[in-house]
Amino acid sequence: MADKKIILTGDRPTGRLHIGHYVGSLRRRVELQNSGEFEKIFIMIADAQALTDNASNPEKVRQNIIEVALDYLSVGLDPEKSTLFIQSQVSELTELTFFYQNLVTVQRLQRNPTVKQEIQMRGYSESAEENANKAGTPVGFFCYPISQAADITAFKATTVPVGEDQEPMIEQTREIVRKFNSTYGDTLVEPEILLPDNASCLRLPGTDGKAKMSKSLGNCIYLADEPETVRQKVMGMYTDPLHLQVSDPGHVEGNTVFTYLDAFCQPEHFDKFGSCFQGRKASFEFHSLDEVKDQYRAGGLGDVMIKNFLFAVLDDTLAPFRARRHELEKDIPYVYEVLRRGSEVARAEAADTLAAVKRSMKINYFDAGVLDELIREQSEKYK
Ligand code: TRP
Image 1: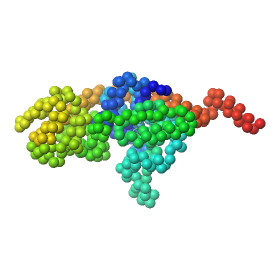
Image 2: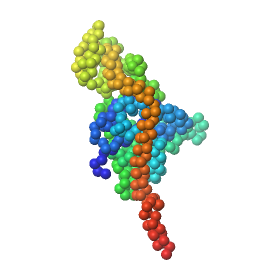
Image 3: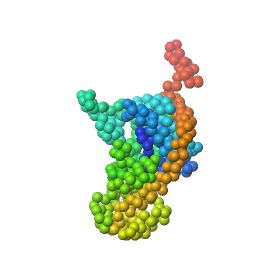
């Protein structure tokens, strides 16, 4: 068990994936996949988790499975190297969840900061019983951190590359693992979180400058957006409200355009797209993002120029994904075949862990050899 490194991670299929997902997790996954450092990599489309707050809208979840799969494949996740699968097709996960539920208290779940925040954002109310207009928190939703522990441990994952908002889930998983192992004997692997190393990628803000990209806020740039759409979204982006005239000194911190550049800009982009900084009124020659920032702070560098550059940088990243997506969209049977096969592989892996869990809990009554022993033991009692 010692040196094997295994990845499990995934996403809820509630919409197409956006560039926040990309810098927060997808880009890293592809790098890790291609690093050859991992013995196994499991990437899960978490449809069952998506249903915990979409019970009345299963069609939305169903439609988005293919969207997420297309996004995965188009950014470079490779089914030859990574197992892509659908959570609901691995029923062993629900069985593990059922046993883990006994190791977690209601009070501990109530303290989970991500769940707390999500309950608030969704408007689930404590007074739901008295107020017919308000919905309470679905039990399945409240418990999803436990099911997430099942997802991670079923695959013996050592490493979980996710965004910052998932930190409390990994922490709860680690607690469940320790509790299980100390109660029933060493069985489960304690995973570690792998966060993005670039601060701008930890939580990419929306195009409106709000803390997070979210479909409901309409402030996302999707991986599948066409260039014209990306351009419009970039041109409408929130910058520095105090930078009214081009000549005014500008602020870089909290300026969304610069946060995106921090997340996406590579040294070679200055050679490729330097012409964005050549205008009729003013021209600049920059060799690094720091130089651009210095000029912006000093004044004289307009938002439109930087937005043109950002668009070029983003499009440079997104164009190959878009091209691959268009190819894959012509071969939907292939995409489902990838998921079907992946789900089969995932199921075998999870079944192996479930068997070990039942063995440790001694609820494997009818396993080979176990029944004989059980009969002997119980007969002894009644002699
Ligand atoms: N909660 C994750 C999200 O919101 C999806 C997810 C489900 C997940 N199970 C997981 C992520 C296990 C990492 C590991 O996107």
